[in-house]
Length: 141
Image 1 (cartoon, rainbow, N blue to C red):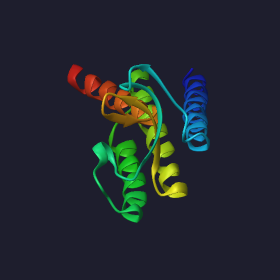
Image 2: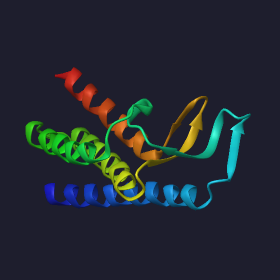
Image 3: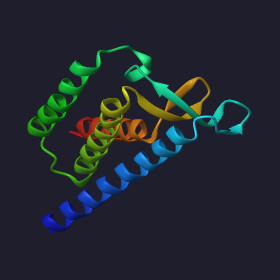
């Protein structure tokens, strides 16, 4: 049973990663295209994000070194015993990896979703969702 879950988690992570990378590719190759669902506040718009969370500046090389170390530390110190915690770990890792690849290739992260004044991408949603699930799991203990 555990082997089946690992296979599904690997498939899930691959699909989530590919979906985000495809959307980033579309945003990168069609930078002038915009589409809004609500005025100019909710929709699709290319944005080259040179900062980290909330646009905070951080040097590229330390970020590319620190991110895998944090993920490695998180993986080895947390016990992913429940399916929820395993899924949350997949979400955080896939989101971090997708954004890290952008930063390594382009020097910035490709954001394509606008909500009011915020710009983000699906990888950011993965990370936020994974962290929320982890916090909920910790809160239940």
